[in-house]
Length: 132
Image (cartoon, rainbow, N blue to C red; front, side, top):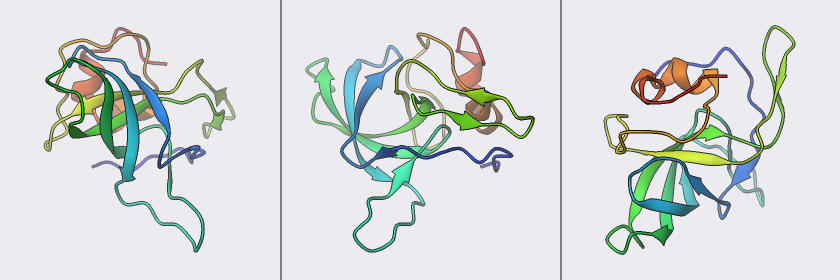
């Protein structure tokens, strides 16, 4: 996986609920784990745009409900800064369900994704309508 040039502010922690913005069948998911996260004593591990998280499906199709899946965060409300000085934030927190190879499970994404996600996951960017 490619490293990020941007230092993304990590704001989503274990227990955060967010929308799943693809057509995989999940609607609302909850973060239950963060891949590669490091945390200090008595601090929750956190994730930001472009990070892979383990999620549990809370609302969606009956066949998807309760499943534990991998997802990549495509949008976050918390503002983060790019190296050129531009500050980026979105109106919601959103994820896209991926498989073990990093390929999206769904065939389309609702809404824009961050450029940091398209650098790491080109197949996710291919099905997105806009990259910001």
